[in-house]
View 1 (cartoon, rainbow, N blue to C red):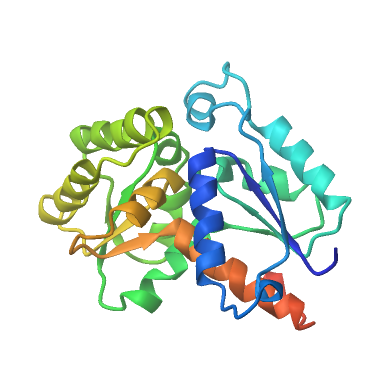
View 2: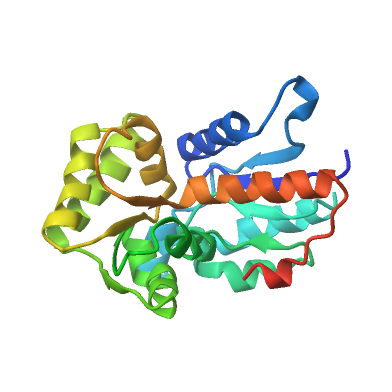
Length: 245
């Protein structure tokens, strides 16, 4: 197979399944051959990202992801995407092990705020404790010039419960809980736009989109970019990945 890309997923598997579903659903097709060519690595045994970020004595997720990227690089994909926001904690280290471009999901997500919601001034971020602690999204939001809020401990507890108790453990989206989190970020913390900085939250958005709040779904953004870049490489167009950031 030539002119394909690689998806590094499995963190978690339901979120990766959501990415693949959205990718196939949003790709313009009329026949089987119109779908994109890609390889999916569903590495579900990668150690917990948040646990390691909060306590470096816990097993690191860097070595297994670096090994995945080295293996996939031998197949020469055109680019790679990592379907886990928290894993971008080691983005620089992971990109350093390969010459294949790795698309930076948090950067892509924040770059869409101005395009999708040009009047937005105050951005809310909901994500795992690990993503909050690593400041990847926070720095992107600040660099883009927005005011922002991370909510409070009550919001964080509710977010963690939705991600871990409901989606990762039970395999189900608690729609009322998801909607309440968005409502709190909008009403209590005056957020014009709420960034879903975790792929499990993206799954919640896919399954429970019936709410009035403006969101930036990081997974939907990376799906759109995967399609954009995938179709360009299929047409033989050259992409200068250094300029997309």
